[in-house]
Amino acid sequence: MVTQWWQKNRQAWIAHYCQYCMLPLEPRNNQDRLPWLLCRACIDAMSRQVRCQCCGLAVPQVMERCGACLSEPPPWRRLVCVGDYTPPLSDYVQQLKFARQLRYVEVLADLLTQQVVTNIQEVTEVQVISYVPLHWRRQLWRGFNQSEYLARALAKRLDLPCVSLFKRTRVTGAQRGMDRTQRRRNLRGAFRLTQSVGELHSVVIVDDVVTTGSTVQQLCKLLLDEGVKNVDIYCICRTPESFGYS
Image 1 (tube, rainbow, N blue to C red):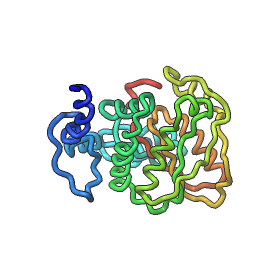
Image 2 (image 1 turned 90 degrees about the vertical axis):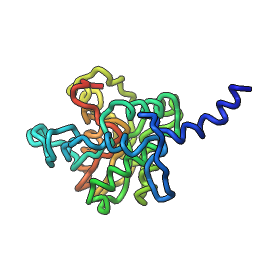
Image 3 (image 1 turned 120 degrees about the horizontal axis):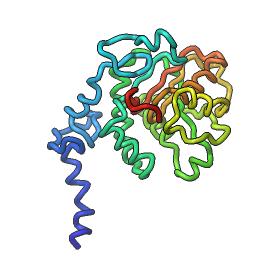
């Protein structure tokens, strides 16, 4: 009986406390887009890090392109993330991907929407939102594609169409532990377009986590080779360089 009572009332209790600092949440109104999971202070702490506007990595001061982006420009225009791949964001992504806690889709989409609306003036130019595909075997095993779910939730919030533009044509080996060169070799020829994109000039690709950028780089090249002018990357987490490759 105690267990049943706890399961019934746990969610109501949790909704009143920040799930990171465990302090009481401030009252919310219906227009407030803040996720119920976190307090304002914790959300602000996630987005406080100054980042290169192109690659999304942490930098000491605001800049459009860091030294790495100047010396080896990525194929996308800019990358927007909620924060680094560290707790609590990394925990939420893992709960979504591996524990199938789909409630985190709405939370993470709210956080990403806040970053996009705050930092991207060109969002009105975007024509479609797409996402990093899974191979059909991986998606069958997992039951869903977390990047697709995030992309569709984001598109709904930004009032943009979400379109499946890519297909993963072969199973790629697990990339955890690979360096940048190994990742690129592993992904070479692993994707293709599913439809014509000749009429598009501005596309957003959504992923849950960007580490070296090898995956989204392959997708960007497919679009740019077909004449798309601008490709932006929106993701939940950007893995700090000190984390190595995964």
